[in-house]
Amino acid sequence: MLSPLIAAFRTPDLRKKILFVIGIIVLYRLGATVPSPGVDYKAVRTCLDEISRGDSNTVYSLINLFSGGALLQLSVFAIGIMPYITASIIVQLLTVVIPRFEQLRKEGQSGQAKMTQYTRYLTVALALLQSTGIVALASGGKLLPSTCSTSGDVISSDNILGQIIIVLVMTAGACLVMWFGELITERGIGNGMSLLIFAGIAARIPAEGRTILTSRGTLVFVLVLIAALIIIAGVVFIEQGQRRIPVQYAKRMVGRKMYGGSSTYLPLKVNQAGVIPVIFASSLLYLPQLIVELTKPGPGEELATWQTYATKYLTDPSNPVYIAVYFLMIIFFTYFYVAVTFNPEERADDMKKYGGFIPGIRPGAPTADYLGYVLSRITLPGSIYLGIIAVLPNLFLDIGNSGGAQNLPFGGTAVLIMVGVGLDTMKQVNSQLMQRKYEGFLK
Image (cartoon, rainbow, N blue to C red; front, side, top):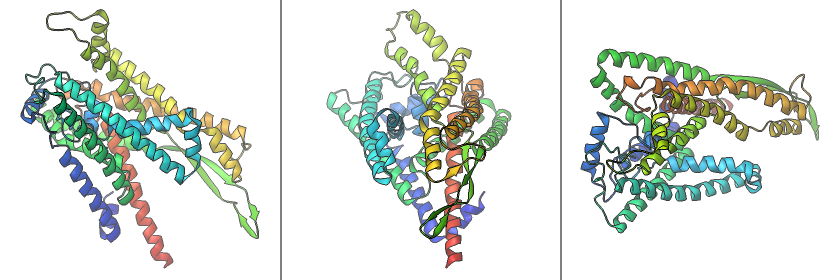
């Protein structure tokens, strides 16, 4: 595992790329700790200390996870990479609905550049909307838990102009984070956005591990580490699993040259959807909690019937109803996202165009039917695997603090993202090392 990294550091150009990535990540983490103008950082820290000793299940826990804790600190990079992720998912889903986007996707590099431009515009709009909502919640004392003694005093600017400045700073911070991610993708190694999410999640692990150690003792801390290793090993095993469908290319004459005649395979991963279904399900399950928080009556007033049921069943991560709904939503979104991103008819047409076929399956519609059948068979265990990994923190909430589905450092969304990004980055390092070995051999 470490030998490719050692070999990469010994290669001058790869070493420059790795150091460039590390430098960008350091700047990203530095911006995540710089408070926005008009924010009472002392009051924020006081409230976060109270959260660490009590309930930390907040409305924006998923965004706070991706930002490495920057959201609840109301820093310059408070909303982090989340607007870009949302914009990318929306643009990708719109390719199925809008014919213009579908045409751009098929145009190759020029069409992809146009799609990237649309994604950037949408990112700015979402960042502006999201930062406005966060500042509005923070100024009203509804962003941080109401149990905090200083939850309503974190923004010192009461005038509209001061709050507009905070919104603009957070929006500019989201645009800068988007630029950081694109710089890593272009000049570094790996996917920039994924590495920034990786850095944000990894930055929280030491603090959460220390919380478990101090609150639960050494024995529980060691058991958590052992469970973490088992979970990571299982995630790596499933993430690497794939169904290889053999593909044979027939020989064909082009001019005086013979092409084709080779055998290859079409890899279909068990977890074809990645972590996107977990993000979808988590985001939708935060909506009831957000609505209850925004419509909560004043002191002394009772909750409405629907608010009581939503609070009991849809906002408590340890409730069996919440866990069951979360699990079923992940299975649904896994099938939905795989159906959107993988088109068997398109793959079958591409294979037929270049003279490829699956042995024993006729080209065209039979090939598309076969690919759809295999994909539906392997998507079921992949969706169940995603659901189990995602609900693990909900089943072991008492290991960490008294609340919060994200308190378990090696569980759920965090471990899926970290393992996936780590495996993808190491594959890219290995491919670049292999490319340089072949260059030396050919020279």
